Image (cartoon, rainbow over all chains, first blue to last red):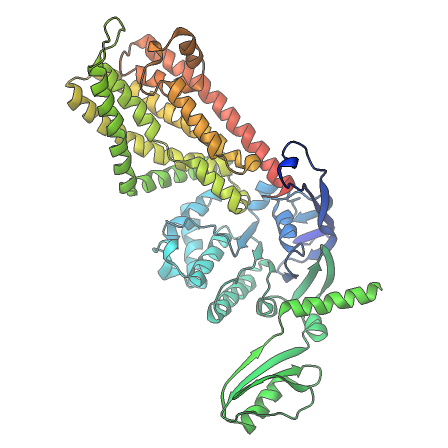
Length: 329
Length: 264
């Protein structure tokens, strides 16, 4: 365990006993339980103030790990400390030191105005009225929710609600913030806005962030380091710059042009798909920069619109996983 | 801020929230009042047509008795459903990461709502029973004792509902347990008929259960409330309150252990 770490995880593992239950014949006799390993001995350490992405495909073990780190799931083996507490032994003490956002679950009371929910949360954490009001003002200003405070949560858009959920997670000014799919379901501008707010808060308050997401944009924009997990094993732990250089080697540039079928004879650029007036190019970042491709396209064609996309995270994970398998064999 | 004052402050905030929500739910309250009026008026009529000579009761007092039991039955919400939903949807996970007991939050919030509805139903029921019977069967000096006994009774019913809701951790759907519980309250609590009118052996069983502490004992104060009767009601209610709180704590701890071991 490193003394200065915000989160320290050592060989953490979790297995679940699963009993098959089918048909009437099993109603009166117990089927033997089978052990299913969700997390298989992972270790990592996160420094205070660091922003780390915890990524992997569905069923990789991300949420199980997050639950163990918040203290709501006891591991089968291994050890962890979060803010100096062993989560599953000191859940209530730890709760004052961490903020949690489950993107698909609300911590707010749906029928209440946002302000009432946040004040109730302040009472739960024992903030006095003056301190709570000051904190609410600060979060309202940083997260741009001042004009939402009097509205019932049920009347907010998803993007507005998620900004309020972040305020709820941060009311007690926790030094560590755990985010599970924070931008799921948001449109492009709401995602960008939420990411900016998270970065601002983390920078100003030195908040450590550990986030899970399927959106490479979240990871690239917010985080400086990535942990990649699959099938319960930690496949990769490296700075995002290295991950990007090694695995996010392609971008997809889509051009909507006056020309029916434009072509770009540049090294590292290949046509990925083509429709009349709409062409997608796969750009190999190891050979050429996206900026150069875009500049060339703007110079040569009448571009009505363009989009630059990352490859899907699942492709990246598959790439990493293939690499890990190759190393093993 | 000390730990005790933090917990008390948060509990009070949840209680106020429950009171405020219940007071805003006017349709729910009017619906309860309507449903509440039907058995009170029907039984007032039935008792008028029933020969009660030698039973120690008269029809007017029994109308007040039914008003009391109905008010206690209609006051609590359905907190077992809220807990069931929290567990089955996984929403309880977020609550478990807070430094405040999940069960205490629900008890405080539902207590606020129950208190509001009970106050409204007792006020409305007293008016209804007063107009129907043309009399008030108790002295004004015992009104605080009657109201307090009704509050404790509704709170007891709420605590048992919390236990039933937590059974979701094991059974997935606690509704059948709730329906069984509710029928036992109606029968052994003496919803429409005071337990003292039951055959001796059923009466003795009923008196020894929490159901009597929830319905018969507090409602009997509307019929005859002397100092001894009041003391006896609070003694039994105090005993069942202590046992119910222990049961809530034990079941809540067992459910939490299960969630921590196996996930929600």
